[in-house]
Image (tube, rainbow, N blue to C red; front, side, top):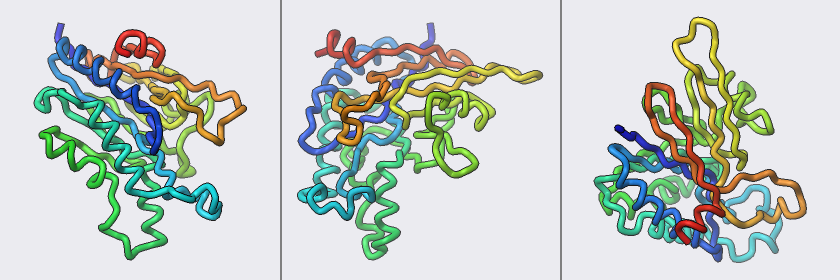
Length: 257
């Protein structure tokens, strides 16, 4: 059977001093999965970095901001990517990186500090080494999407208000935004919505892929998060249609830890 596969990594929220062992587990899964695919790509759905150094929420909180550095954010992201791609043949894997709202913090910061334009860039600073290793990388700016065989990949579908979809109905809301299937992150939750309209040639799917981190962010401590943690594997068996397989973080650790 011809397998045209996309491994989608939801919001990873990598930050300095974080335990990055999950990327070793994902690396072992990558090696095994590539063997059974005819075409294979890795989709990093955005918010791969937390970018706390440029947080607008904390900019006036001197104690919280103490010690945070842009370069430290980039360096830990490069370490995570190195662990993830260790030993993976560059000719067997394309990488799609859809920028999230956390990476977009760089652009927003530059809006207030235009003298830094051209000096800070997640695409250049984080992904330079990956491209140097021979990997083909497609970088998709925040609020834009990358389309493959009728399926759109984006960090978050954007509503008429200019805001990303949120809440329990995120997948269903996304079906009202797109005329084709869409895969996205942002909410840290896993959900699938399906919709077939009269006279439409196909069923549309909206797949919210959860997140890929083990920690609990400071702002979420004590709250009910309903996060789903793991990886999502898609098989593009037809235009606009995918089969969906999930691998939870716990199962990933059990198999590859």
